[in-house]
Length: 247
Image 1 (cartoon, one colour):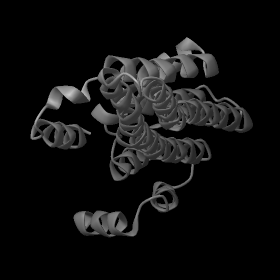
Image 2: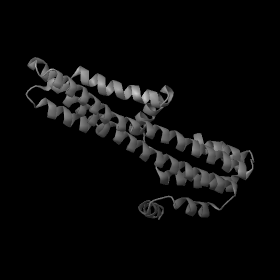
Image 3: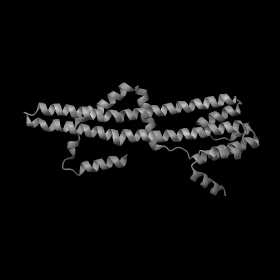
């Protein structure tokens, strides 16, 4: 994103008059229109949450899948060797995995554990989808409001044909509105929606591994069998690297 903004700034800066690219009327039409349409389409709290998710998507990374598999297998080995209560004292986990393991320690019904964790998975997926939908809507509406600004500029242009001094402002509104809409859509909204989708897939895969691991510990599956089961989520190169490391 920084690279894209920098390239645009350089392209504008090497021109004869960079200030012509800053047009208040075009900004009002495009940015104001996108904000208004987005807040009409979605509640304010959903929009705020989507932007907070987007910031985390760029500045945080999900844990490595192999490290998570190793952690769950280690917990399984401890539970098999020392019992569930001792496993709970030693486990350094939080969030989704901790919730599942506590239910196992509390001897909750297997079906209840799976239902609770599966429901949280679906809720997480729905929240992520909502954030992606907001940015896709912004990507859709920004060029549309750019076209609205272009139409307004064209109307002003034709209305001011008899007054040549007004033609420049109308032409700037017409062209810059299209530019602003394209930049918002193709440099910001669409890439952010794609990044959110990627991060969502990564998080959901990790939580699916946690769910399978919790259910395996609850069923007292042998740690080696559990490791083989969870390793199915790993890419082939990750499985090979893990085998070489242990070897």
